[in-house]
Image (tube, rainbow over all chains, first blue to last red; front, side, top):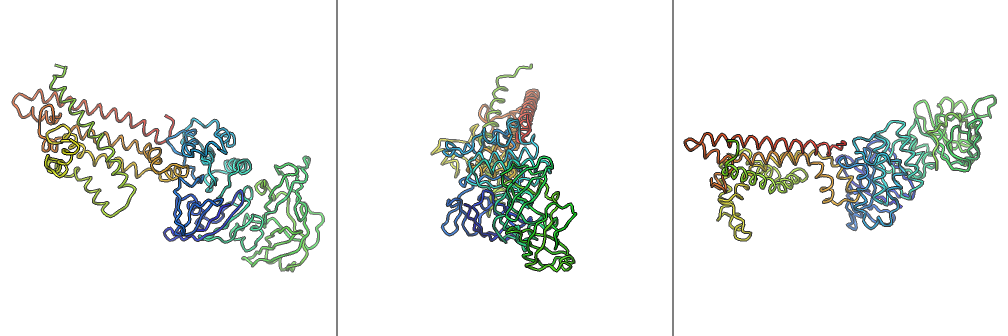
Amino acid sequence: MLEFDARCRLGSFALEAAFRSEGRVTALFGRSGAGKSTVLNLIAGLARPSSGRIAIDGRTLYDGAAGVDLAPHARRIGYVFQEGRLLPHLTVRQNLLYGRFFSGNRQRAAATSLDQAIALLGIAPLLERRPAALSGGERQRVAIGRALLAQPSLLLLDEPLAALDAPRKAEILYYIERLRDEVGVPIVYVSHSLDELVRIADRVVLLSEGRVLAAGTIHEMSARIELRPYLGRHEGGAVIEARVAAQDLESGLARLEFAGGVLQVPDVEALAGENVRVRIRARDVSIALEPPSGVSILNVLPGTVAELGAADGSSLDVRIDIGGSPVIARITRHSAARLALAPGKRVFAMIKAVSLDRRSVGYA
Amino acid sequence: MWSLTPAEVQTLLLSLKVALCSVAASLPVAIAISWVLSRLSFPGKGLLDAVVHLPLVLPPVVVGYFLLVLFGRHGPLGAPLHDYLGITFTFRWTGAALASAVMGLPLLVRAVRQSLDAVDRGLEQAAATLGASPAWVFASVTLPLILPGILTGMLLSFARGLGEFGATITFVSNIPGETRTLPLAIFTYTEVPGGDVAALRLCLISVALSLAALIASETLLRRAVVRAAGRDA
């Protein structure tokens, strides 16, 4: 478990944040300048808090009151920087083994061996190259491997996809998923992309201007209308947990069962029985008072209006409770008035199957 | 005609010994000073910077005089060094090396400091998170990355040492076989009638030596730059 409680001041920026997380992947989410990287630097010991306490699984890294402040090299925190930061004068192999030299006794009970890391990250062909000869995606994979091989008790990933193009992002995301599922090291993942969050994080800490606005599981957080401006108006929406009930090969649609019913989603790369997370973008959800007939929309889910958000320009957010699962719809103020939406009203949420694309589905 | 006389060989070897020893002795000092100037901030830093650079702007004779005062047999530094460590500088080749080292120090410090300033601190932080203590970070990351600067500085300081005249002659005089390096020997020949040819021969040796040092260090530097930049050599 990660316990974080720290105050610090860097120039005109002040951070005062506290959270704890037991998740496998804890995402620090927020706009740039919210203090995400500062939190990572404080955990790694690269920046110093003015007061507070930081601990991992009961091992105190920093405690202002008790005068504990471990040096970065004594913290056992693997840090994957945005820009990789591979040592340019060493080969990929030497970079990978750099941390091993210092991890001493821990190495005997090494959780991850060099061969495992190479296989996990697919970097075998790169071993004798130097960092300057690697592409952005390759560099990031080596950086992850290097951090992992130092046998850390926590892995920090600072927007590891930020500097990459879309195909490379998908590639690294796949490796991070494998990392999460095959290696037992807890991860703190900094991002400002909801796509990435849905795919890999189970806990989210939302930061804004150096403070923690909210923290919780991704489906709790995504269902809160008041957090919508921070989680991304355009891409945002409720995240529901579902299980793949069946894959129809002929139509290419998967039937996903969740607490409120069944969703039909195309191109889900999971087998029947596996659990997935689906983000339903609020702008892709429309509302009907009667079950519609003769429409192409595959997903029509009965529910009740739970909450109407404050109007934001010409639109507003509506939270619909579907058998216990929240779904958020973003509709115009005009429509909300026309349908006379109010809490408790019975409605049908309609979601086009094709709006739930590959990027909306994460594998839990 | 083309072979060197024993006296010339002696002068050449002495010059090399003095210049090499001065570079070797001043290198650790220069790296330490550069590190302090590049990484720490403290009151009096500007003063340290100025003192290190003084030999660059002072007349060499003045530096030689100060060395004589400080490191003479009865000087505040010379006396304890002689009494406790048995190191004597006055009228010895070691004194010539010390004079060269002091005159070359600013060149060495400038080159090393410049490359230290250019080192990406993020790489050092990355090494620290991988478990390297500050000393290891310095040895395994910082040092390899500043190697080109170190080599450049060593060449400059070596060349400065080969050419050192004013501080040397003031501090340790012009003793054949002990402190008479190439420039001092050339000066001596120009002072005696009929010494022109001998002086010219030494001048040519001097040119050849400097060229050889330049070429050797350029080769090393190219390799070091390639390595530090992480390109496949």
